[in-house]
Length: 326
Image (cartoon, rainbow, N blue to C red):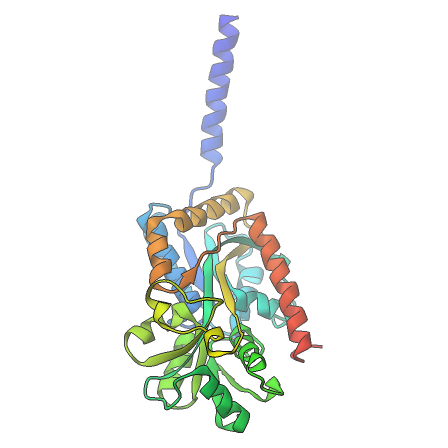
């Protein structure tokens, strides 16, 4: 009996070593930000990558690749068609991603072609103008649009019909704009480029998310005239009024998270879900969220997959309602 017990112990130890040997260990890690530098996806990749590095979850530095185009469609197609079996790759995603998928804007691509990993928070929408703009409130901006829609252009970092576009339409609808299709929206490849055009005077307002506007707020280049949250945010963005405070009942929450290639191994998938979860749980990430206007949203693995599916369905219904898709 003693020999048998020893034999079982040896076998168990061997199996443990084998399991450890087969466990996924990241190597040359990469995060794709599907937009130009300076936007929300870029922020998500760089901040989460830095936190993973600080927590020792990845070896060395995580490479960030900016792959702009098509409101995230270029990056999605790249992952599906060319990087499908990569175990070291994660991709920044948000409500903009589910919006484009909901509207069939990634030709030939659907949400089930990739694996949805986890969320790292929710980024409430903001509407801003240049610091020297005569407009100081959301009602003032909406009154200008009502008076002459052609005189006001609103820039955003998603394609026409994308999440940035939908946010300003939600606000316009709540403000009593009779036909929101008359709101002039100008699309750019990322929030950074959109703000640059605002500062150049090419457009009159900007619609984006709190995190991508943070640097421009700190530099004094823009003024936030409304946050599309149910109540004031904590941290630095607590100084800005909500749309609801100004009599316009509009809320626009942009979730932030990651997806992975559809052919990623189960071991790698579980590793990345766990790693992103550890980032979310860390004190470092809590501080990052507070500094950048991110609100809590903690969804991992299957729960996040279901959430994205529900988001796609909801946005599809909204897009049909306002005539963006049939």
